[in-house]
Length: 316
Image 1 (cartoon, one colour):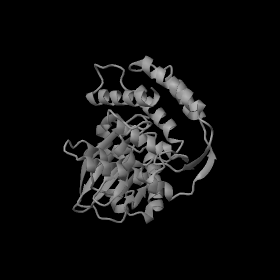
Image 2 (cartoon, helix red, strand yellow):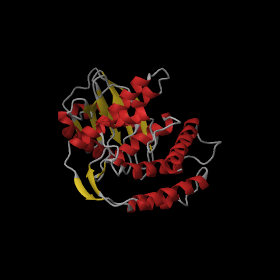
Image 3 (cartoon, helix red, strand yellow):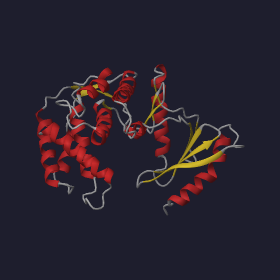
Image 4 (tube, one colour):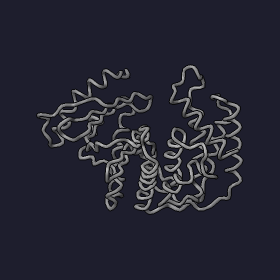
């Protein structure tokens, strides 16, 4: 099968959206489409259009993994059902799914991403703390809406991934190998406990959180098996701390004392699943960064410095 390039995918999506919109029971008359995101990763290829005049987003998947658009949409809908009683914390409404075309139509939240707020140099400390409180609040609301599966803590997966990192070529590889070994030792020494597992967001990063005046909306959920709450916490905290974190984090945390208090206002910061997942996420991201200081972007270099700071702080 020939893989469509970005231009071909975009052309196909622009041709398909009017029929999909009509199939959803809406007229395409007077509506125009604007391309605002195209993803061409190996396992995830899609085009997103903003349907001007309809308040809608059109998303269509392509390639052998096109059905990921459909499974993600189902994950969003499932989370939306769970969060129905929490108007402050939501997911986008998806009124129509076209399985044959691997396409969906969803409401346009039209709110900035959390990262957009953090890129504002004039963001006050109070606004930053409010943002962190909202991020933690969404995780807490989503978890509270589910009945957990209580199982023994499983270390094998995390230890296996850390073992792979211990020999992976990477920037400052000796340091990464050293920290992967220390993280493995630390996790091995932790006692096994009963863990609460729930359906996670699965890809909770700053770009996947929209901050509206009265609502925090999570997008791009991933359909994954039940997992400890530490997975979602680690994803968002490592994303935040590696790019926007302080040089003086609280002991045992990746956040400053005030940031930690804001984020964990409605979460248990002593949950035993948090630290292992933070260590795994930070070191895994480190291992994926371009090893060449010449070819990696300034943002990647900034991320690398932040990840190294996290590892040094938590592992010594």
